[in-house]
Length: 110
Image (cartoon, rainbow, N blue to C red; front, top):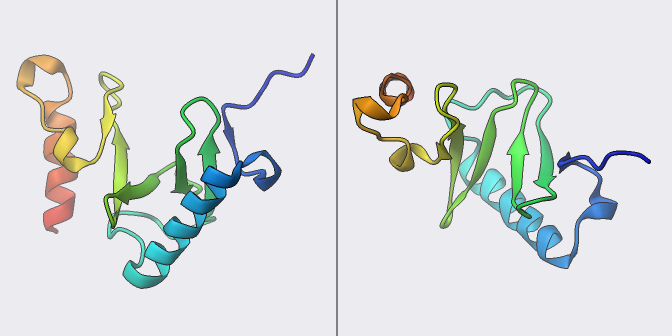
């Protein structure tokens, strides 16, 4: 038995909801461009089959998603696995990814 992929770019596996989310992502990308810290290399649309989230990704496994109507980078902390948009990544030092938050915050300022 073939194991099911968690992340797919196969539009045949996208339902109507996910195809609509894809349209919204493409419209935001066209109107806003990709986030500043998002590498423009082998960019594709993908879906997490477990969560149903649809997102833009690239060869560096970076993720961009809609945060409301704004296309933003979505981060995964390498220290603790916590995920979210920039405002979701601010932790206290005891949580383990405060330094990661500082790193991505600084890159947004540059």
